[in-house]
Image (tube, rainbow, N blue to C red; front, side, top):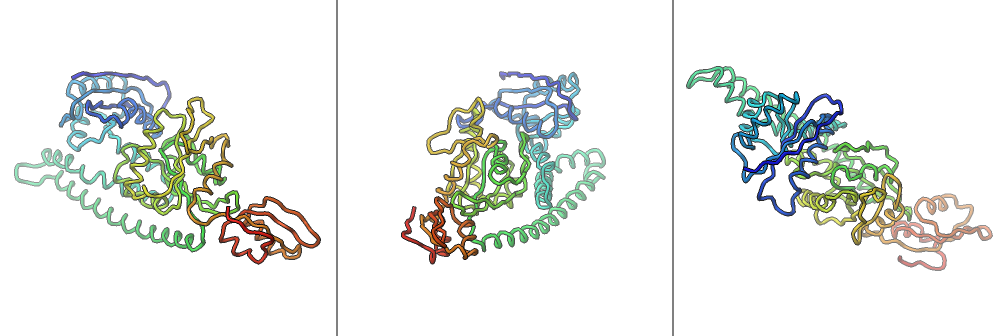
Length: 429
């Protein structure tokens, strides 16, 4: 079997020294990330989790080895690397079966993680709200439960004779019962939290404000854009999955129309199904939005692939039919190649294109057409003057005798409220 090797030695200090392992499947589809690109992403994930990536290994295979995923010869090579580089953890860029994980840990004599476990660990460190923490624990236990059987069989062989249940099997059954009991507790706690969130969402919906949700591949710059638009101060850094818990802020568009803007968890290739299910609260903000602003890292060579993976997740959660505005971010970066036709072009970090983006968001929102009006309001009518300034984009304003005359743009809903002050004409934009 043909094998390739790519090694990168890092001098950065870190709590754990990691070795990454990937497999290049010969029958990979053309639309998928290459094995090297996937391993690059795994390296970013590992660094986000706090690991120091010491070495990377790749093997080309037709199919997975049932015992180790990779071939036995490659396993022996990794054994030597683990000892030579004093590796603490070996991370595979593929989901391992319980048998494969048990065999690898026995052979390598260090901790072995797969891609799903690594993502779960990152999620556990990022969740800040009670709901987010419950969701992560639920996903971790759902992942762990079917994997207890492998360790249980090993315990049984160590502790009992043929036809008897030894201490290991007893412990296994106890662990299973405890995990199932904890899963039930988590489900009840989450339903309670979701009930509260549902009440909050209904309260928001009772106010006629549309919701716009930011979506995109992780690290595309959604939180930076969210902060730029709302001044919310949401954590925004280069770590993957820096934002987990849904954040909603009010945003005024150029016409003074107010909307709710929601920041969401970044999507990723092969996002574990348990996490898609567990993070239902974050994703509910996506499924109930009037408009999705799909943020793309325009300086990434894999921008189009990342867009395709986001579309796949949107289909999984039933949001593929929601109107979208594609935004190519990082326009100030050297690798930016230009936005495709129809996409907005911005730099959230530098503030480029933000005014144009707000105008595009307003134009893309369904319903609530903009109205062009001229108003005449008495200078003594403070309440009406306040409503004009709060709800309309003022294009022209002048004082005539004891009145103010305005030329404005506003939503049709706001126009109906100020219809008594209409002067000269009223046109739909």
